[in-house]
Image 1: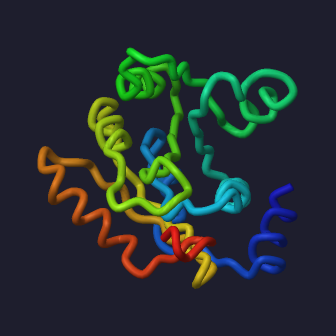
Image 2: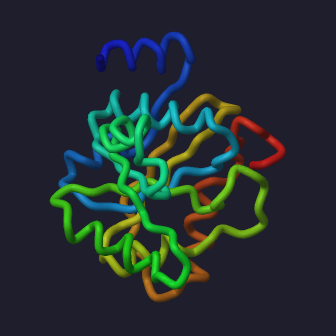
Length: 182
């Protein structure tokens, strides 16, 4: 199936991959991957294709209700982990604990928390990376240039303001599928 994913991604869709495409070979078995800008459902299949092409296993979390029949098997097969989103729980800590349970776990998140335009990213991904003591890998969903750029691993410091400036700079000029939400 890898050849089919490559054919669709490179030939049919005309996309390219830039940057740190071999982070799994660098022994980065655990990381928080942030994918931006998340503006459309199209982002999901681009991510699935890229995952197949690079051979890098990635994961995501979703509300536990999505893991019931008929879609539960598929979501688990593509790396999904069910999350209980009942109020009153520390979701950052619950997600950070997933890193302890798995030998290999690369959690992909969209810091906007929605596909709509936002002024500021949510900070959960940052605190998850800190709590799990794993790096953040930045990943672009650049529909304007039809490319996915992947950063080197970045370990968050104790200066969230400077860390966010650094990460936001990586995404300068990147446009999502729905330009006005970028």
